[in-house]
Image (cartoon, rainbow, N blue to C red; front, side, top):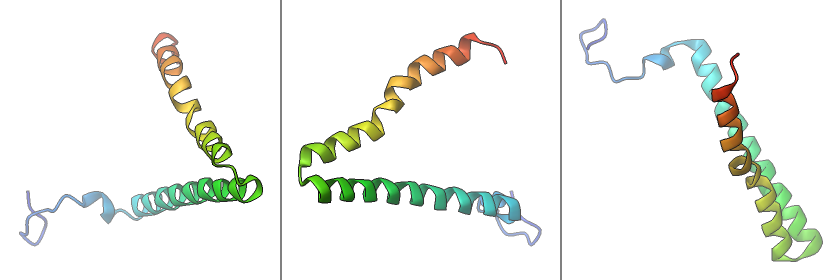
Length: 82
């Protein structure tokens, strides 16, 4: 496939749309902000307690809901109609 100038299309056609570029940039910035918050919470907990176990428990509390809820919610989404 080629573009209007006869050059081969490099597969970045979606980035030609202004709304998609805004959506993509917003998603990227949101992901960066969420990771910054997670690191800041870890630093704060470690600064207050000085205990690596508490830091590990914070990490576990941030991660644990995903594997615990993913399978039941997926099953529920397959069983219940919209």
